[in-house]
Length: 390
Image (cartoon, rainbow, N blue to C red; front, side):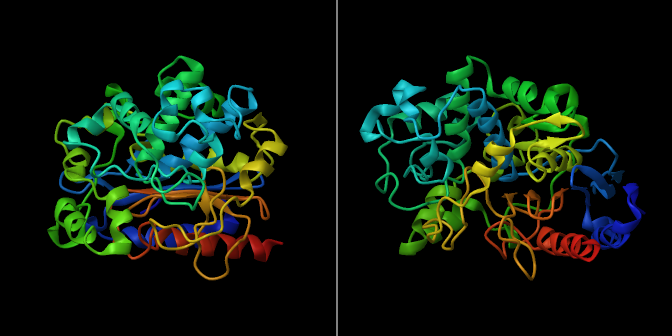
């Protein structure tokens, strides 16, 4: 069974998506797409809670991990358009405490291209509980010395990116980053599925994640200890394998939804993500709403760093807060967005005008640096339809 809206030309894409969730053990998900500002797909299927047998509904949201960074980055671009930040200005201009430990000249652009030398977090905290306070985490990063030298090479700020963005946003606006997100993006776009964390009265909409962070029941702690001994892989452990991380994600009290972790705790509908990226694929406009100006969209879509990322081990072709959109088969060179661990993600392709977003509660394996290959395959199918139209 599949519910929602399907433009006739996108029926094959909807069918491919539906095949991912034929059995209850597969969980559920949602897929949405826009082409040149027009919604062409908005579908959902499967189970939002496998154990309880609850079906995925039209308004179901999912925790989407690093997909969050694309939303956080778009929020910064809205503030840049309003003149509240400059990409090449030092972060310390907006957040004076950040100047400590040799970071006085680190720029917003370097943060957004993962080139600030602040990827590490594993050994900077004593307990995973600290990650539940975004201002406390920002204060740790403000005191931290960059490693390596800022600008030397990109190294994925897998968790730290969100706390850095949150601190910049809160310092220039004086408001909680979650409130700014609602005002600048959700309300502007007219969506109700873009959150860092989630309000208490919205949590019954959130799908239940399964089966776990790592396959085979291995803990993040154990993997982190193993990986950090592997020399070149140590930065990966330092950036992403934080002891107790799964305790936060699967906390029965839902504390992951109480905090702002704008690198990893975004709670989204595919519909809302697709609408945001539809604007980025369509010169900044969607459904008569201007999210960003055309020149801003051109700026943020330009590749800034092509070198191998020292945390992830490959070139991510970093833009200002987004990476190359990964699709199966032929790559679209101008497509950009952000994927999340476990399979979720969203992207925009200004060349074709296509935007695609996918959320799910069934965490896939880690066969790629950005999760599994479901979105890459769905993206290839969507692009084929668009190319055949053209």
